[in-house]
Image (cartoon, rainbow, N blue to C red; front, side):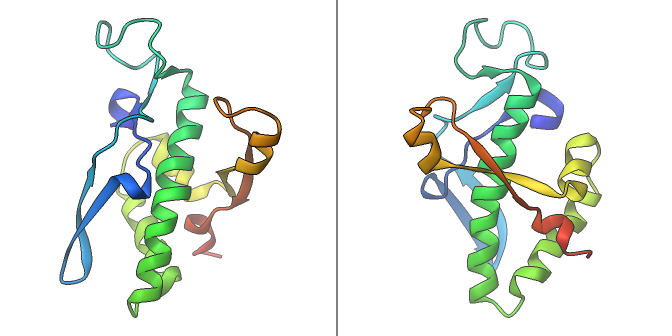
Length: 148
């Protein structure tokens, strides 16, 4: 949805449900849309009012999606499945990399090749009183690292 329509979801782990088949993920449901963000330049006219709080410029919308969906949610999922299945995290990140290789566009390519991913610096953001515009730090990108 982000690549085609500029819409990203803040799929927190506690607000999502992963359905598995024979121990492997096959469906993903999100029940809380509070953190939805949209690229103001790519959302179709008339879908959202111009002053909507979910509208961001492309860089901010992409930052939020990378953190919430990839670093936070997917990272948690890979860690749990890596511990609870014989696959291990490295193999699971490799599966993610292979999947992204089949997707078009710059966003999938960036996830595969960027040296880092953003992680929200919650404690620093709290001290800086930046709850609504948090600070981020860079962490090594495990999707890229599986090829190194």
